[in-house]
Image (cartoon, rainbow, N blue to C red; front, side):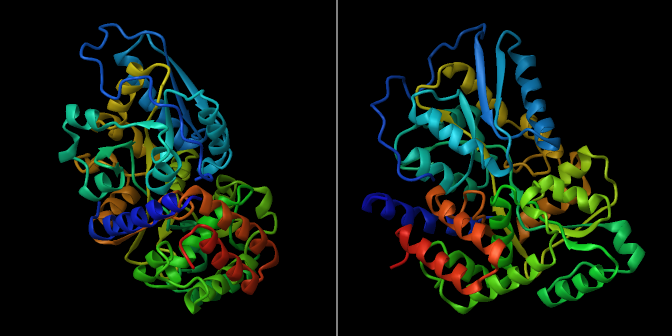
Amino acid sequence: MSTNNIKTFSIFSILLIAALLFTACGPATTPTPEPPVTPTTPPDEPPDDFTGTLEVFSWWTTGGEAAGLENLFELYKNKFPQVEIINATVAGGAGFEAKPALTARMLGGDPPDSFQVHMGQELTETWVVDGFMDPVTFIFESEGWDQYYPQGVLDIISYEGEYWTVPVNIHRANVLWFNQEVFDQYGWTPPSTFDEFFALAEEMQAEGITPLALGDVGIWASTHLFEVVLAGSMSPDKYNGLWTGKTDWNGPEVKQALENMARMIEYANPDHAALSWDQANDLVIQGRAGMTIMGDWVDADNLAKGFEHSGWAHPPGTDGIFVALSDTFGLPLNAPHRDNAIEWLKIVGSKEGQEAFNPVKGSICARSDCNPNLFGSYLQGAMQDWESHTIVPSLAHGAAAPESWVALINDVMTSFVTNLNVASAQAGLAQSCIDAGICQ
């Protein structure tokens, strides 16, 4: 990473964390593209009859996420029936497989018309700083969206005075999911501390139930678990300091987090490396596992699978903390069907679009004016927590760190979940911070 990019990242990290805290609201450096050949403002007179195609790139292929995306497509089709939608999905949770495919296309001069990207460092450092995106400020202005998006969200999608993407939702990463029927059968209550977690895990094992369901065939799921354990093992200020260099990766808080996670992994299903996150959730649904720690897209997975006995709680140490991420869609430079893409973004950011998408996706609106009565009990609670809890950015999902740094941490997690060597993992994490240009 160049010195300029490192400085840009450091400044943006501070702005990101400040915005998340005070508003309840990438791959390695890529080559600089050629100067734009398309305008960065909308045409004065959009065509009356939209035709051609609209290619939307995402990793939403299963359950509620696929259903939510289809709801957005239906809204678009109703408005522009002559436009053919190309659903360019690449399977794999958190975009683990999709992001490399997108990078190859973007660097090869073959961008889709719009693509899914996480709000925060994943968007800004990967695509905005190096000039691969068109700003979408004009859409916010034409649609009057400034009054409906929380200021903290607007701050995060801003760079050099422009908005660069349209957020469609807000997700919470730190949720402990369990089978309420199984808990009722044995008289269990969800753990609020790590000591309670380990005591409950022993009871579950004694009953022949796997305590923790994990599916990290994509290593992002272990990084996701690690970020939640980090947030539960230190204060929000300490957690936020990890991404700015203020908190020492060699310090006692990180060591404690790794020790907590190592003990948790010992209670996980032995085949976790062969399962996806939703397959791990199936173990909870079937009563074969007691708990899983995953984002609130599990709520949509349960809905899609007709599972009506799901319980949820804050994972150990994270009561009052909201580990946040957001899915967004942007406008690539030289999008092949730019007018169609602009209309797509208007639907993504609209009240109608977000109310059609989020209840089935298992997320809450990025806008502040959605009708809470359209959402289930878990999501209504998430809306309240978004307003009242301390917000911290997700590591695994692009909010806290750029993709290049996340990739280094993924490598550390790949080894750690296999050997559970705390000292080696902590040294690797500390080195990753140095390699990212944040720590000295």
